[in-house]
Image (cartoon, rainbow, N blue to C red):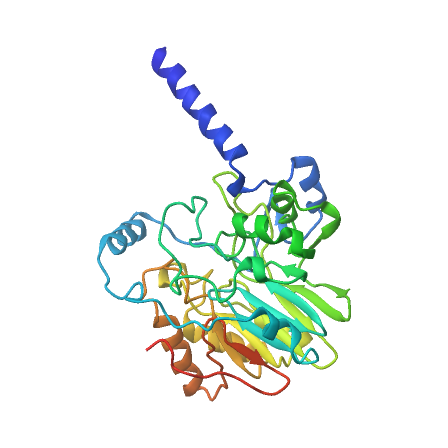
Length: 365
């Protein structure tokens, strides 16, 4: 009897922790999620992919992952801080306001300056992508190219999904007062609200929603992935890619995705794109259905009809078993073999679409 009481107490403590620890965020109530029931991509209380997507985590696969986790790999993280260009706020936000510029912050975080607007995409500015930031390693660059406190007013934050390496509690708490609008896939607004973001500042969207933001057209487009921040919210929120269109420029951001037919669908509907930011890292053959291999990144880029490829989703954290620089090495090799134009900016280095300035140094060597 005492054992049973202790077990019940432990379960209650765990559930209280899952429901109150702020980093986990908060999912909508069943009543609020009821509005999703009529959607084609929502079944049995969960969002689903366009095509069947199952990671075969059988005993053999799990055993191989434990083996790879324990095995030492000297190049899984860089030996020294990787190159990073510091950003002067006055230069970044006040010069050439008519230009379309994109600055990479590492992993999938971008600052897009377009039509006089500042847009942050997946701004994960924390040190480690976990719910317990006090533990774990530091980002490869040793810091950010600009301090969060030096960021100016942000017109919009666009999010692709709610995983820790894309949506960071600490970052949102620090930047929310600077942000006019949060533009997110369905369900993600619940996390933001629990962190103090006003409901009026959040707009949520389903796949193929197309809408105006200021002088821009945005489209929430499909991806092949999953979502969740705790043990109880797997696929409770949607994941997506994004299309950003101005009168002169077309930008595509892949979010996290396995290779799938949606890339061709997006290319046919919205392409060609002047530039496409495509995930190429944190992959493994065992979970390639949700994270493309670098060679598939180039194939997906061709499908969306991109003009210039920028490989992202690497260069900040170790979330897979490959060498830290394998993603960019393999993506560049595949791009060359397929005659694809690409850019390889350092963290903090700006791409200027208006002037055609596409950094291409081999900084990861």
